[in-house]
Amino acid sequence: MKKILLIEDNDIIRNNTAELLELSNYKVEVAENGKTGVEKAILSNPDLIICDIMMPVMDGYGVLHAVHKNEVLKHTPFIFLTAKTERVDFRKAMDMGADDYISKPFTATELLTAVDSRIKKATELKQDLTAGTDGYNSLLQIATGKKAIEELTQYRSINTYKRKQVIYSEGNHPSRIYYVLKGKIKAYKRNEAGKELITDLYNTGDFLGHIALLGGGTYKDTAVALEETDLAIIPGEDFNELLHKNPEAAGKFIQMLAKNIAEKETQLLKLAYSSLRKKVADALLMLQKKYQDQTDGPFTIDITRENLAAVAGTATESLIRTLGDFKDEKIIDFQKQKGKIVILNTQKLEQMHE
Image (tube, rainbow, N blue to C red; front, side, top):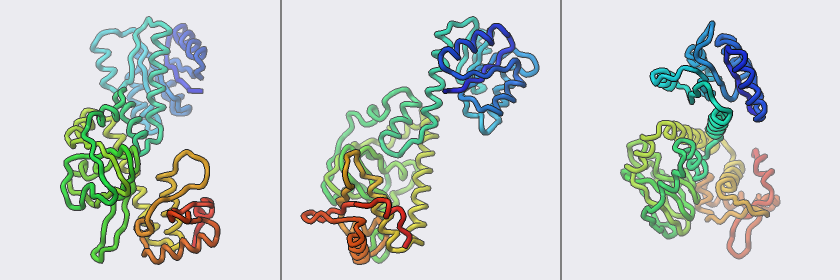
């Protein structure tokens, strides 16, 4: 049950409004002035604050200011409830960061519509957004109220890449981003000796090329299709325009990029300090997490031994020996005809230490 803090000095309005909200299945806490309201907000951390403007002790503007100064409360949706209807009052409230403004007298429908809308939006913004199409689509739908992915990718040129065909190369300057409509892609770097390390894997619904574009530099790795792949081509100016028009969307997208960087740091630590068995186990788990569908049964990995070795950061010969050990231990198996890897025991891979 969502919790609402109602700050209102008029007893009749406070009681009637609280009753309306409680009948709509909200848990309501009330305060009769701004100072008490701030104290209760800090103690209870509500999902929404509804606050009158003209009140004794501390007015509504003071409450909003105090809420925005508090690290825990600063993102809490805030609705002003007031008899002040002049445009200058409305503008001041919104400029200070209020999410909505309801004028007295108001109807039950007006109140509940505003409350439901603000709580729904706040709930969606708190969701953990992934880097794939669902997360990106949710992000932009929250910020714009539109199906932004469809708008961004619709009517774009679609390029088909054959297996092993290069999509972009390290050192080149980006001018576009790519959206995976179908297929699988690897991004990799090579050292001076020519040894390959896979830095990322992409699947249907992922974007790629956006990090280099946002960074304003060159591609830091090379992207190659692992199988026949269809990509929607999105010009860089279209992508930048979308982000520049939507500060909220841009901020959330930055959070997603930060999450990606944190995952890369974890991957590098594992490559640097893990044993061979742990590296191979982590590579298998990474592929399972990336490509597992919703069907029942053991997860099957269709990847060459060379590419799997590049994901694990080890030599192909060492990888093959370790896979053989895992097979003997009944952790994995091989499909006889195609040589695909079948994961039989995910738990043992997760518990691998040496």
